[in-house]
Length: 130
Image 1 (cartoon, rainbow, N blue to C red):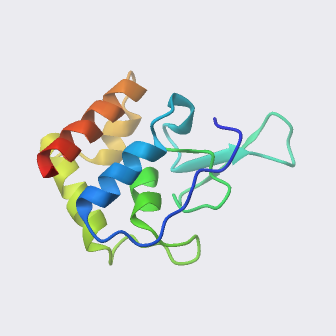
Image 2: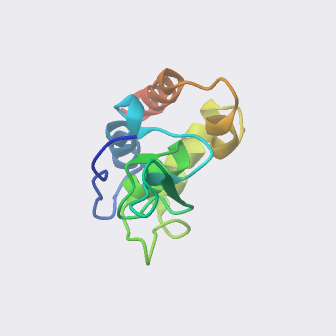
């Protein structure tokens, strides 16, 4: 897990922007996680972690792929841009095609999945749109 919260973004206007931002968010291995959308050090429990099902959680220091897509699309913790964001939906559709219609969340959390797998998928999606 990274020591500092990951950046947030204004609303994205294209799927390519969402995917490029997601790639940037997850570029460091410690910025990626499994089984939680977002996590950060728990100030109340030394050595513990706090988790959220919202990729836009302001303190998030690491994200799963789906949480990173959500954060990259823009929005805030109180008003996440999930359902209404066409760029996010299009980015997710491209990933699902590359994953042969498997769920991004399930694919991210699969036992044995690696950070390199995540970046390779994002690189393939970005290349498809470039």
